[in-house]
Length: 371
Image 1 (cartoon, rainbow, N blue to C red):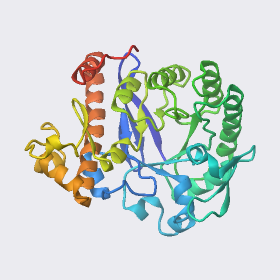
Image 2 (tube, rainbow, N blue to C red):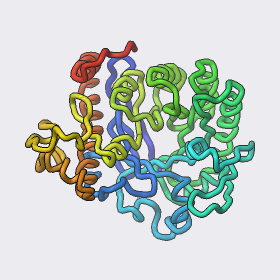
Image 3 (spheres, rainbow, N blue to C red):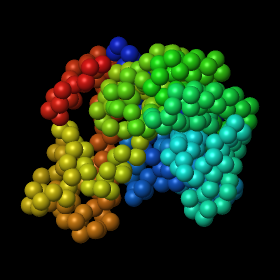
Image 4 (spheres, rainbow, N blue to C red):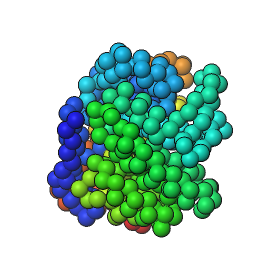
């Protein structure tokens, strides 16, 4: 598969780039909607495309367990299986090692775990992760890594860095997929370990790099500062991907730290809980003040929910338990995130990123964090 990354403009560390893959071009900074099990929850691929998404994320761990990578491959690969003709990035399964720690046993060879579906025992190794991702035929595959929690001891975080580097080497040797393989930097919030991990991964010459192991319990300030410091040790001609970080405030600041790609379940998960994002922050649609509110969620948003429906109607759907309400909420939140990335790209191109950031925080009525 052909692969290229071009940094087309810069404003300080903030970068306006373009990622070129066989299945399409991804304009960066970019947000990837999360389709863990081969679907962005509640939406059709056509709706996700219409919102402007250029790349999706799907998860190796979940698709391995159900329906199985062999079945997906036999049915034409993940793109055909889920009817998505644009690029797909697959996570390695490393985050699930962290998030489902009570079901897992981590060792030098990989991870032994019990399925959350039926309790059966499985082994996920760097080689197995590469086998699964190759069978899924994703455009960007992620190296298998160990993601320690924010409360892990210094020794545990250092062991995770050691394993992540060793596993990255094994992934490079094992990957046979049609796409390209990105490395993942670990190290908690320890500057020294982050520098070491980034340099070790950079020496392996991956086409792109992810900053993993954040948004796992540390403060938002620590998240962005760690991303900033890590990015300084990654090659400037490769895309940088901050994994699993999704608060709009953090995305805006991380772009200013030189990050190019993001993913998070926050827009879709919040939508299902009734929380909607807009230019001035966020609110929950179930509040009684919206019972007779004729306004759209955001009059400047072009999503189907804002074009056609009032806050009163969306509240009615949500409190009535109607599926349409969850779908419309999801369409809106996803549009918000994709529009935010577009606005950031335009701000960088016109050399006004700092002004954009100041206005972004002013509209929310909060003090802009330092850095």
